[in-house]
Image 1 (tube, one colour):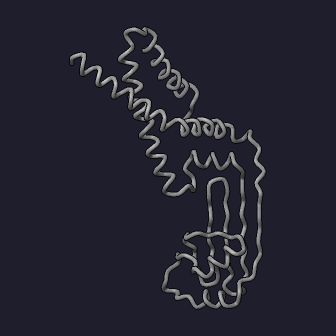
Image 2 (cartoon, one colour; image 1 turned 180 degrees about the vertical axis):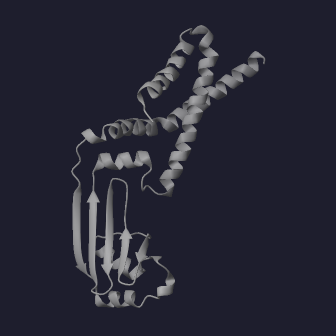
Length: 206
């Protein structure tokens, strides 16, 4: 390959390297910090905040729920009128599927950094709601794990991972390109491989 093409390739690789590094910067900081907090989860104290509500369903809504056709299935979204009433009580259910039975509606509402559930007694109209907020660190840890984060965040993690691969691959290419003038390049790269490999073999037990 002539020098002109090498120069073009080198410029392209450098451009992809800095673009991918810019895209990955905040995500890598987030995943690095939450890697530490997850590794020390037992040493980081959390004080969950629990909110509990006991409500009585209006008679009209209760009658509407009692008249629901049983053939509609065991899982279905709450009626819009019920969601609107619950929102007025500061209970936001979104469009999630609830579990319907003959005598109860149960709606799990997990989310990053917390959990919640809603239960409606179809005989008495009693509504029980409990919301648990485990705090910011738990929220960030769940983002790291992709736990209860939804489709958009899962797409972000996939795209972020591809950007990290581009960043690492172009970095390796640049290392190879300049390794002749930097004798310590490959020993350092080899050390980066050897350290986790030895730790996994010697100290990580299956």
